[in-house]
Length: 325
Image 1 (cartoon, helix red, strand yellow):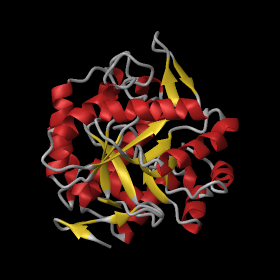
Image 2 (cartoon, rainbow, N blue to C red; image 1 turned 60 degrees about the horizontal axis):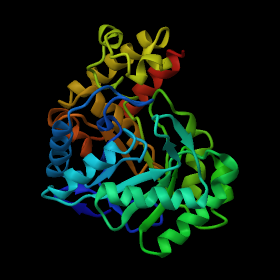
Image 3 (tube, one colour; image 1 turned 45 degrees about the horizontal axis):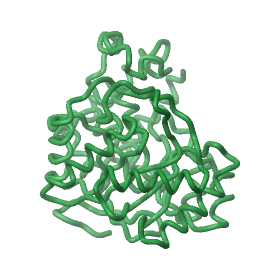
Image 4 (cartoon, rainbow, N blue to C red; image 1 turned 135 degrees about the vertical axis):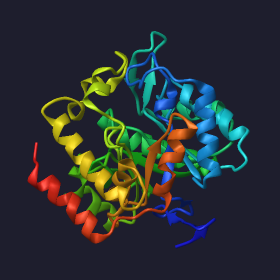
């Protein structure tokens, strides 16, 4: 395992990409006024957050064309251009939008190529380090998209290709065309479903994993309360999410109490403990951690180094088993 600035690096799947254990997730910095927004966001705060993450040692950023309908990529591009350290930049295709901001899906070869060119332009780069199919939708088009990404990689516009939100059957189909470098799935102590089939599959096939929502979109950070959930902006998609509503919300906040208890012994936040829980699984290469301000980034920076003991990991799992939804 390589290291840089004392932070251990992990190789992503079959690639030469060496990742810090956490990367900067750029979903929330896309801002408001779109279907999956987190509410309004100040671009200068977003850029400051990215710069702080890079200064603290994070070496990769994950975004997507759909985040803010192109705006997240634009902000990432501005931040990278002025950063003291140049990170690896990952983005995604398959979710597109009309002029009225309504979202649609396409994995046609021409659409994928068009999306790639738009992402390169917004990000201000000549090559994207990891380009991923965001969702396997429409399912019948995943082979066509994977063939297109393989050709675009041969042209030098992409270094490595991966997928997000794919199941085992879908990965099996496309790996006949070209190897899969990585999978980006949702994974957290509240959403452990991929442990049953998907994680064993990627381990057996040498596919790296960068999991998203390790803190369940902010729920496990330690800053979420029932009152704060109730006060979320009307355009925050989390208001409708099952984990943010009863009966699950009360159980989830009790879990945060346990994470706070474990973290207090190490002077780390519940969110850092939640991220460490996902990194405990040997199939997981690295985790995506969002940040909307430099302060939020600083609070999560210990996740670059902090790891759970076997006893602490078992303690969390025991709570989950004893408190089913």
